[in-house]
Length: 202
Image (tube, rainbow, N blue to C red):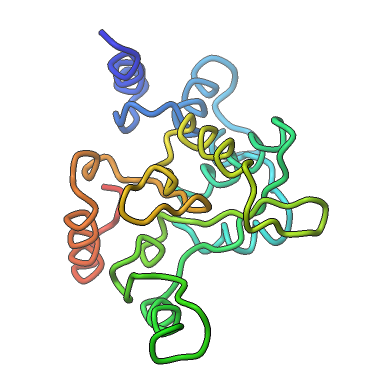
């Protein structure tokens, strides 16, 4: 038995999704089982303290399952001495198409290779972070790699590990049903779920 099997076994015993990732949901369920079931009448994983206002604005656009992951990453980075903010969350297909147009049919440099419906940002499961020094945004910093490690420890997928387009500020919460799917197939399934009114995390 490896550590992922152990986590899945614990998750199964707690009656939560068995994805093998020890993120806020898993720790929240452990807290509820061993300490107290609610914090201020909320499940523990939903009771993580709010972070900075800019991050909270972006986090509010995410699906409920992804919000505690984003907050946990900001808090975990701060505990490691790294100041980050969530600077982008969910985008509509139209917003995604507008970004795709930059550097192509609209002024400015290219910022994405994904059209509307072909980005995980369109489905409430992805967010981008920025590293900051005080109020100064650092678009490039070795700290992005350190934050990437922290995100993976939480069970997030990190864009810095991608081989085609490396995207160090990008994190996403891959649904359990999509764990073994290639990115293209997962996005196709997400579009289908959206069209059929199916939840992402089910």
